[in-house]
Image (cartoon, rainbow, N blue to C red; front, side, top):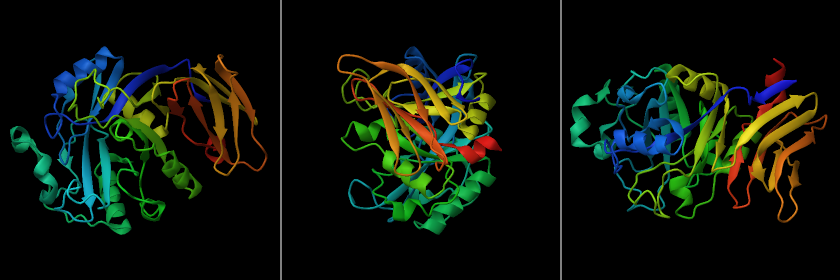
Length: 338
C-alpha cells in the first residue's frame, strides 16, 4: 500500500501568497504572523512585490516565515492593470530554498513602483533584467529562478487573462494557484481548469491555494482577503527545510476549508478519509471522474474508488455543505512505481 497523504505525520497550515507593508499590503509582517497564528497557521510566505526580504526573525518553533516575492511580467511593462484592464500579465511567486537568499532574480526597475521606501536599502539584485512577455521570456525567468535556488508558482491564471495557449508554453512551473482568495472574493472562478489543462499536457505541476492578501478591509469583513485559501503541508517537522522539502515533493493539498486526512493506494484501490463533506470525487487526467455523494442532510467522511486499467493517475476533490473545496495533487502511477 502506498500512502499519499499520511495521517501519522503533522499537518501545517500555510498561506503561500501574502503582501505586507513592505509593498502594497496594509499589515506589517509582524501583524500578519500574529493574526495568522491566531487562526491556526504555521507558515506564511511573505511574497511582497518585486523584492525579497529576509523575515527569518519571525521564525520560531511554532511558525516558519518563508522568504519569497511576487514578480510580474506584463504585455506593457510600465502599464497598470487598473488602467489597462484587458492587458495580459503573468505573476510568479518565487520561494527561496534558503531563507537568507535575498538576491532578487530577474530584477527590473520598471516594476519597482510597489516597493516601499523603508525597505529600498535592503533590496539586493544583480543588474537589470529585461522581462519579455512571451512563452520564451517567462520560461527564461523560471529557469533563472531555479538556478538561483527558488521554486516557482504560477499565480491566478484567470485574473491574469491568460489562456492555455499562453501558460502551456511556460516551462519550469512548479506550482499553479488553483484557489486565490483575492480573486474569489471579487467573483472570479477558481483555476481548476488551468490545473487540469497543465496535467493533460503532461506537465508535472502541483496545485496551491493562497490568500494573495493585501488587507485593505478589516479582518472580520466579508470582503477580507485573509484566511480564505491555504495549503495543508504534510510533514514530519515544522522547519524551513521541512516545509520546502514537502513543497518540492508535493506533500500537501490545497483547500478553502475542507480537510483531507488520508489518501492511500492499494493496488488499484484508492481510499480517502476527510472531514465531513457532501461529495468526494476521484478525477483522472482524462475525461473520467467518479463522485460519491451524501444524501440530503447527511455527510461523508470516507470513500473508496477503483482505478481502471487504462488510467495513469488520479487526484481527489472534496466539497463541503457550503460549497468550499479541497484539492489533492495529481498522483501519477508511473511516478509512484519508481
